[in-house]
Structure formats: structure tokens, C-alpha cells
Length: 137
Image (cartoon, rainbow, N blue to C red; front, side):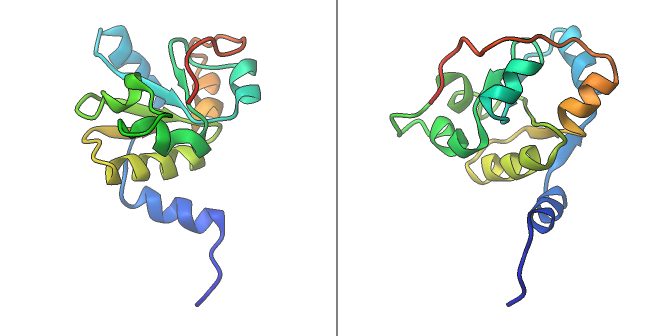
């Protein structure tokens, strides 16, 4: 069996998921579409800059937050199984893996924000800074 690296897992995930550009997501939100936006980076990354109204659920806590049967569940995520959900990270790798996992967990409309925060900020879209004040798993 050959050794796999993170890039291999990300490439395989990208073959089985959908992506949305930061600009497309921003326009959809501006039109009033009801998206749940989940940031899977670490708290220190989120604190530096994040998309307004995004939930912080670090990648390592995602499955517990998405499972309504765990004490680590987060209602805003697990109740969004039928809603559009966008996952964002720094550049798209962690988000791609997260999207694949949420699809496996039954989420029907989950997408990766292509290029992550790097692309979001590169397109000069709105960001906020500061510590997360919501519920963490």
C-alpha cells in the first residue's frame, strides 16, 4: 500500500464535492439566501479574520458538532442538513475534507468555499476580526 499525504486526501475529496467561489457565496448571502457558513479553522486563525456571521467549528470537532446524538452537537450545524451549508478554511483543503465528511453524514447541500479565506480576502469581501463568541463543541 502506498503512502498518502494530505494533498492526496484533499484531491480525492475535491473529486466528490461541489465548490462555490467566494464572490458567488457573498452574492447569494446578499440576496438573502439562507446559508449556514462554517469556518473549520482554529480559533487563532478565526480571531485574525473571518467572514461575518460564520460559525467557528474547528475541523477536529466537526463530526461531533454535526451529530445530534452527541453532547458536542451544535444545533446551528446539525439542524442545517437540508439547508445550504458552506465550509471555509484558510485555502480550501480542510474545508474540502469537511464537506466530504458532512456529505457522508447526510448533509444534502454542502459546498467548499474555493480558495478559502485567502481567496475571500483576495476578492476584498467583508471580514471581521476578534474572538469567537458563539458556542464551541
